[in-house]
Image (cartoon, rainbow, N blue to C red; front, top):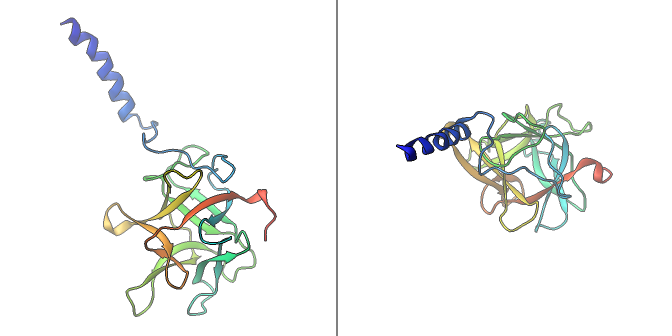
Length: 198
C-alpha cells in the first residue's frame, strides 16, 4: 500500500509534464545562426550553403520569364539575398527545429520584379519535375533539421500537406535550382546585420 501511494505522485507529475500544452517537444532544439546566437522568429538571415563553394541563396529569372516564378539558386561570391524566416505555432521569440515547427521562407528584396517572394514548390509544366520558386505568399511548408556532428549546420525538409506527415530533403537539381532531392543542401543561417548586403 505504501509503495502504491509513493508512486502515485510520481505518475501524476509525469502525466502533467507529458501533456502540458506549454511543454516543448523533447527532441526539439533551438535553431542557432552561424555565430551561435538563437534564431529570432521573423528576423532576416542569409541562407548560405556549405560544401558547395562560396555563396548564399538568391532569386534568378525563372524558366518562363514570369516575374513571379523566380528560381532559387546559389549566388557565387556573395551572401545572396536576405530571407525572412517565420515560424508558425511557436509561442516564443526563438525557433525550434523539426516538426511541428513549420517555417515560411521569403526573400526580402525591393528590387525584385514580384511583390511577394515566398518560397513555393511547383511542377514544371508538362513534366513530372518539381522545383522551388520564389514569387508567392509565404507558405509554412519547411522544417529545419540539424546536421549531426556539424556546429550550427542545418538542412531544410519540405512538408507535403496532402501526404500526411511526409517530409523530403531540400537540395539542388541538375540545373542548380532548389527542389526536393537527395543529397540535402546543408547550410548555415547568417544574421543580416553581420555583414553589409552584397
